[in-house]
Image (cartoon, rainbow, N blue to C red; front, top):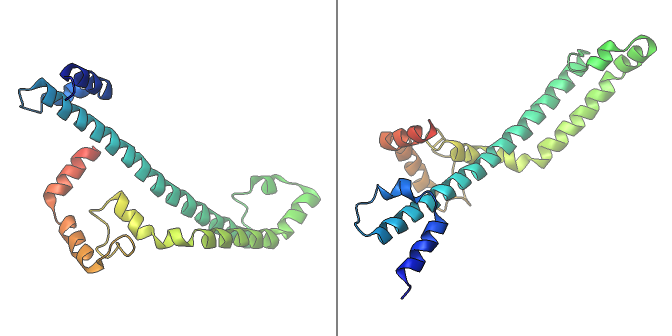
Length: 179
């Protein structure tokens, strides 16, 4: 059996914010209250950490596909000899400008190759976008977004997704946490 004072000190070290949780528990035992408060504080920290980790993946996906779309834009504009995003070419003068403008097709091809490389490299990420959408907002994700290997029974997960999207209480709780 452990000494209560030693346990209490460990909990105090474990959760400096336990006071804000203590009032939520009606147990008269200070030890139980401290333990519950410490557990809640630890869970809250873990949840915040997980939410940060979940933000990383959607940010990565957004960055990759935004970059691919910028490459598409640059390539299209170069093919049309629109130099909006290439101010140094616009500002070039004389022979340098002529040489650069004649090379737009070559540069457009280089951009297309780069774009194709990114699309090929991140093809699996593109295929997982529906699952990533589920991580961002499960309430608006499509019912059929969860596929193997993430779920073992796709039919059941689809029905659960429909139930989830129609659960106003969960939606309310989720909206309350995001504001």
